[in-house]
Length: 347
Image 1: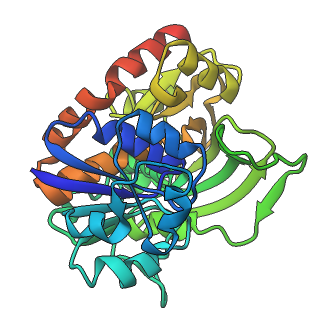
Image 2 (image 1 turned 180 degrees about the horizontal axis):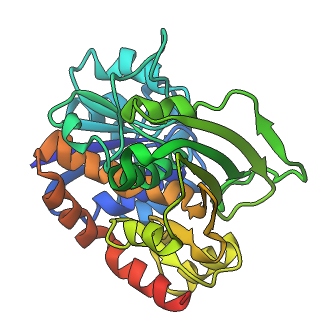
């Protein structure tokens, strides 16, 4: 039975811990905490073992938290580490912890793929390159924005191939997550050099893709506005919609008025953490004009990368086929059922 440890307990770490705690095929070692705050109580109440760096262990014991051991203890007894620590810490963790102990690791989308602080040789997208992660020691799980683009672009390329000339994508990104305490500023900001374009080209190298990224004052979800330029006349709206009808992790919604509609409905329906774990194509703003298809879809930020991380575990550790991995993932996250419920709510 594989032993898996989550290094970090932020928005991604909390969700991964929830999922792995219910997976009977792995031994979930626990999570790492770097600050002695109230989140540690949540973990302990959920019977999750907590490990901390040796040099700050006294900060936790002073507050009488029941600590299972040190960070090094947890990593030494684990087979795979999911690095969910603060963005940018992955490289140091790899060099100081994972490599010396010869441990496999999954890094999150904020870590470097290229340059002196590169943490891995591939970015994973379960729709595109699942099989390439089989048996790898280090892999980056693409960010939610990157994962979402892969789920949309790959089916379109498979269906329409050389008819497509170019993809132009505007990422309208939420300012902060629901659980974040940081201020949501009344400002629309742009990223002069978004990494998302290069990240997608890492696993779909043939794509002709241009990406702009904007941050808006919202906590609910990202929204991607994609223009697909065809060489000649664009396919019909129905043909585009049918492309995604059987895709895993994509819901087709007809009447949502905004990202808040979808998020609030997820809470009303009792989805854990309020996550849908997928992207949602909004047909009311899907338009065809001459040689251009315009698609807008909302992207469940932190929620979507959790099943993606889980699929990566199926590849790296269990070496399952993609079909078997999706079945296993669907059983745990109930994504097909969530999709059905959302599509019924937003007919």
